Length: 376
Image (cartoon, rainbow, N blue to C red; front, side):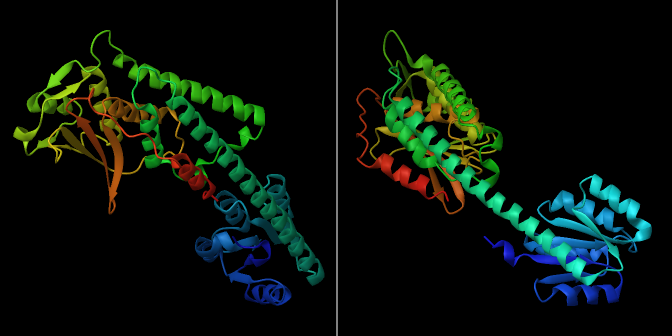
């Protein structure tokens, strides 16, 4: 990140002599860019706007006036401190622009060089204060974001042991986190309106409770009074079940696919949720037997990684439910990336009751926490 002292000044004026005087007066202490009209100034801003701290513009110029230019700058580069320089005859426009918040200050022409330097220096000092405040806020928001994400991670891990109707739920949550835990984009940082600890805590509790309730509602049909996996599906029936979610199902070796025992309603829900994430019917599904012949593998191409880093957002409940249901069947679900292509791969055993999953390896949670620490 640039230091505030490294930011430049842009001066826009159609008078060639004024451009020279301005650069001579301030070029010794600041980096100064100059432009002969509003359009040229905008081109400089498009190229270097993020590196400019102060903009000074003359009011009367061919084409756009200084006030019109500064309106655009306020909208697109709000961090820039804006000054209007104008002759006494145009003071009314300048005063109105100050009152509307479009400019920080106005300087009358002809300039007093000492006053010009003072005014521009004060504008840069204001920019520096704003820059430092913004940096502190970003740092604070980053700390809070890590705290929030750590809380969400903790909630998911605790939640994973809270579903007596699901098998291997901790394994499912661990795989879900391994596949989808990532750093948030700047636009995904928690809102500044939650910088009150109590408000933030209440918001997170409400969101987590709603998330858990959604998960329970989506997976409740796994509870049966008799067998957990009462439905036997051969290759044709399994393909039909998959085709209810995916319009295109490729099954190249149907004869080798074993009969699969499932809980049919939860399995259908699991496929529908994966189809939603994979943007079906745009993507098809590929069904094939595993090498050992006692399970099937379903490959589901997906257009892109999930966009939201909020692991407990409402939109993520269906995806986590799919993980939970796949592992409940004694299988697996994981997100794989080959080059730039992403795909979910789900493995379902022929006999879920006989399928066992190994316990989680020591340190699995620590690896996720280390990833959290890398979110600076």
